[in-house]
Length: 154
Image (cartoon, rainbow, N blue to C red; front, side, top):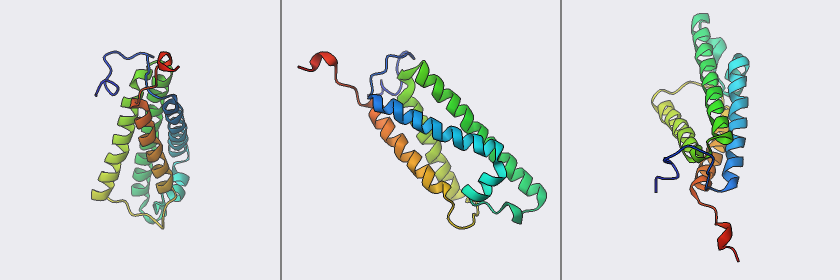
């Protein structure tokens, strides 16, 4: 049961559904855009997409928040680099990649319940992250669902 998630060897002998590869590529593209924007357009993304009231904080606090926000964006970019390597060279790690991305997402959701960040209104980033979660769940399911062998088809 755990073989698709933790393969003995990391190579391109991927046995899951091909649609999962496309879904991982879409997730990576979306996360890359989110990471690049968070890293390079930190203030705009923090105030508009995530609804953080940056202007209401003292200058030092605002700078700290923006620095941490940019660090999260950089983290997204590093995960994207890892996922691109998996898509190109180590496709047997696709299920594990989906599992790690989902675990990170869900851990941040749990963390935000214990350490909520005040926002203004309903930030649109929530909806994007829910779409990402849906894509990750579907991609994970498809990546562990083996393809039919070609010889079994009449």
